[in-house]
Image 1: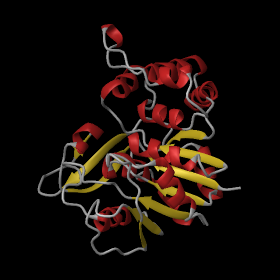
Image 2: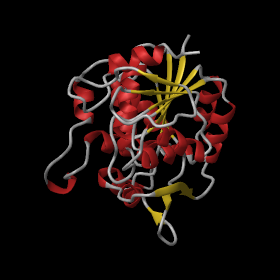
Image 3: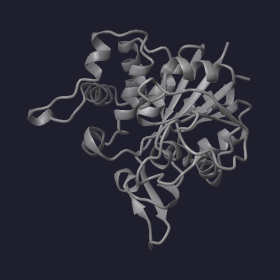
Image 4: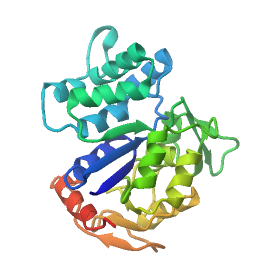
Length: 287
């Protein structure tokens, strides 16, 4: 049995899960929950729940097949009071309100979709992402604000030591492989790694930790970053990976401090990672 944990957020984590479900027998996605914009931010503010948007994408990515439910979960309303809301976000919020338990709501949403793995939030309580930016005084707070910043030195959370769900720690302890990324370096990946208990669990897991590097710079968050700079940023936040996967000629490589594997990973349009290619590369790095 191959047990894989994937960590991150946004479209990047969903792409990884589409790949991982092709070779793993047991899958757990640990999703950053610092989002404070759009539909997720509105539901977070109104109901006091973790933002559901990235979690919704991950549940859909793990769905067993395309169905009316998976299509509906991604449907976004474009008029009236629901304008901007994704239907899946509303379902998750409604299940959380009805059960009084966000984790139970995600399990039920996964059953509706036929998801082949578990999706858990990085923390069980609301958090705010904050960043130190070179050349400025004080800190920037909020995921949207941090994502619009450049020259980020480091990120952390408020509160500083939020609790992760026990399922996340259990999954990391029993994993054969941990996949980090791709995705927004500071506002998705490191927003999850900034949870101290998760960072500690990553440090002691016996699983091989694989970082999947982005295909391009994300302006302004990682303007000027090469592959090595991404790895160095992870290390600066207490996450030492065992190997980094990167696409040929996508980003300059730089001076890597960990083994690197250069392999074609992009879709034919070059705009995202191809699930079949990524699955083959990741499967070859299990164990």
